[in-house]
Image (cartoon, rainbow, N blue to C red; front, side, top):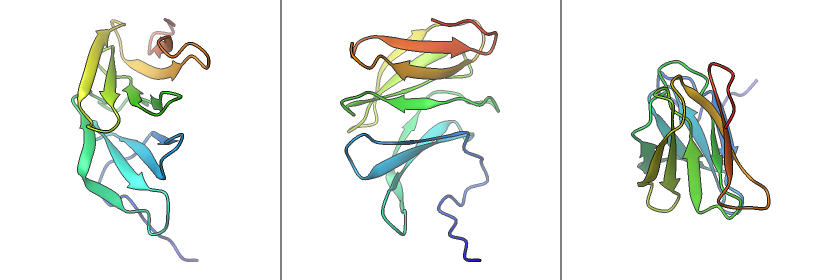
Length: 125
């Protein structure tokens, strides 16, 4: 059996998402950042670009791309939603949504400015 490990850091990745158009995927790392990789073998890590500032703290935090691929959203252990610019990896907006960790986020399939999220305590916004 041949194993190709693409992420050699000591952190696990609770979420992996493919970009809707570009040949890349992102991996939410328990190291409090989102790493970006190419989708063609050898699946190289982009060492110059990553999405930082949100916290994971051992929670199964998820991330998601907007339908147009211009934004990347992530939950955070501080109960916030972080919206990143896909190209620059800069934080566009931080929205305090919950008192406990924000675990998952999804963009509405028709209305691009509407998102849904859920919290560790079971609440949904």
